[in-house]
Length: 175
Image (cartoon, helix red, strand yellow):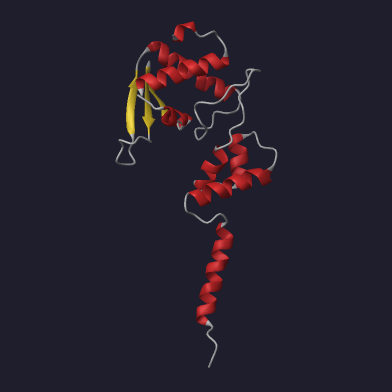
């Protein structure tokens, strides 16, 4: 099935998807969560892929899968090379990306929220992703990611509110 894929960027991505699904026993949602950093080249002809999200994982260590199939290793390395060539090779970026009809990578919409949840600023997110013209939109996704993680969207605002609360308790009206 993988050998029947034509030599296009979308087909390369599809072959990588097939290899990862097979060797990592990945569900669709797990494959979508892979980041470039999930793949580690540990030696000639050997990759280690770490899968962090699974309903069977009970800790933060995740699971490691070794891939030593020469065709799979070559396809995955070539795909990561293509991402790097297009300026989309930051380790925090998604590994599997949509390829449009023009053989270009589509912008990543969830990454700003994910990076915002991890504490990156809008400027840092814009620099990492490289495909946002509006800082306002990046900031919107960053705040959304922070809220989903149960963190305040604006740390400075939260700090000021906390200081005001402390000040209010210190200065009690005299009765």
